[in-house]
Length: 192
Image 1 (cartoon, rainbow, N blue to C red):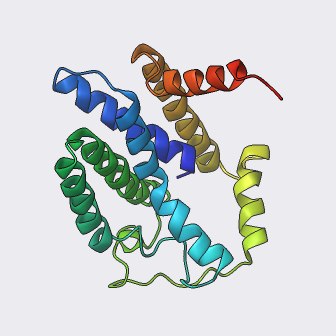
Image 2 (image 1 turned 180 degrees about the vertical axis):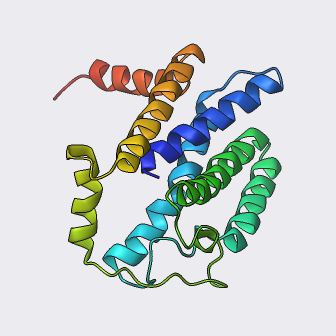
């Protein structure tokens, strides 16, 4: 999945969950769900692609063996600081990322569907192409579909993002007001 798809799926799960318990999404947990949803790629992709410390971009933070204790630890810390919803939102974003990678691997008929989330028990084989070639392949998906499956995955990913944007608007655009206030304050400050 692409990073924006992970963020979208995490937000949809968070939004539906808050509505299920009779609440509405708010700014802090929205930021936490987005951070949790992006965290595995923010850590593992550079570890693999830039620093070559792990053979694939599915490693340390993509592992359920790391995700479960890290998620529980984040919840415990958030609860101790009376910010329980931040911990829950982080877990929703983080764990939905791992579930999304498994589902995406299954949709693409990957031979390593569950191996993506079982590091170090399962270590995926190293990439067989240089980083620049892999990045160009990711970009080429948007410029020219090689297969019908490629087209369907792009359409599905775009649909999830567009639906999420719609849900975010219906939710009152949580997280936007603090950004707007910060920007307005910066414009109101006298310039020297």
